[in-house]
Amino acid sequence: MNPSTDLKQLQDHHIRLSQLMSPLYLLIPLVFWAFFNYQGVGVTVKPVLLGAAGWIIALALRGPVSLLAARMPAEKGRLLLVSSSGPLEELVRLVTLLIAGLTIGSAASIGIGWAAIEIVYTLVSLFAVASLSKRTDEKAMQAKAMLEAQGTYGAHPAWGLIERVFVSAYHIGAALCIARYPWSVAVLIPLHSLLNLAVLAVAKRSLAQAEAVAAFVGTTVLAIGWQLYL
Image (cartoon, rainbow, N blue to C red; front, side, top):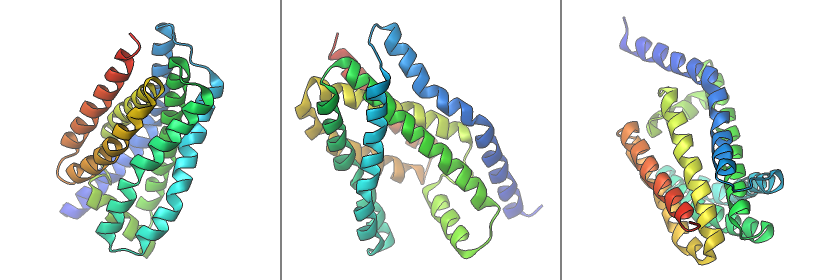
């Protein structure tokens, strides 16, 4: 059997498995929602939607950065784009919290909404990857090459599910920290960018190590945010 054929079949199998596992992704924000409600923290729909809107605004703000990155050498452009995530997301998160109110309920709600819409975006990307796997045109091959360089194309879907758990933990924890101490955004901006850069770099060598980095940072930020209210 041709090794490249074996790899292609394995990648296709993982992509199909990702589609089957997609409902599990949607359970992640619901589990966090249930946890906070169990702890007596009122998670409400309006700030959840505000959190989702905040993520969309932060994504839109990356548009001009993407245009600038496209004019740069590929590696430098990627570094710029990934590095911009910290200031854009954390500053927008701060604004959404100022609008909703600096309370633990608003923070948990906004964090959950932020995590949920990012999961929806991830699922859309999963189905886009499935579409790419069936195409052989130049643009599709370029996109697949980029994903392979990141170490994510055709990876087992369990890695993506694990990543969403800890990234969601980070978003919720960051919202809790900012709501308690708005000045903490100055710490979270570089932390957020460094986390994304570290995961991107380590994923090229080992997805397990990349997930370990995300797990450590996401869990730590959530734990600190939760402890601030105890």
